[in-house]
Length: 50
Image 1: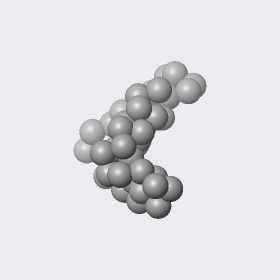
Image 2 (image 1 turned 90 degrees about the vertical axis):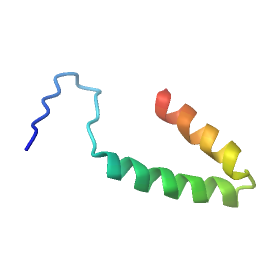
Image 3 (image 1 turned 90 degrees about the horizontal axis):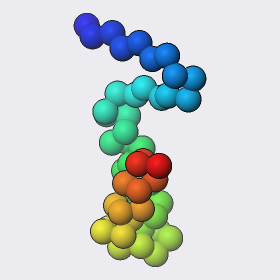
Image 4 (image 1 turned 30 degrees about the horizontal axis):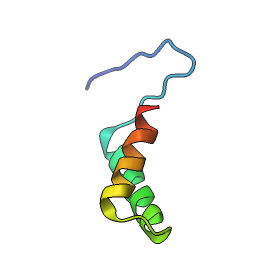
């Protein structure tokens, strides 16, 4: 079992499955706000990279 140690106080460590679940919920929410799938994906990715 891998162990990850994080020292930076602002760092967040999550499992990749958690990211997929969050992204799917954000995608659905963005699409209900009128964005098409491509626009919603671009928005989610840009938020993750900030």
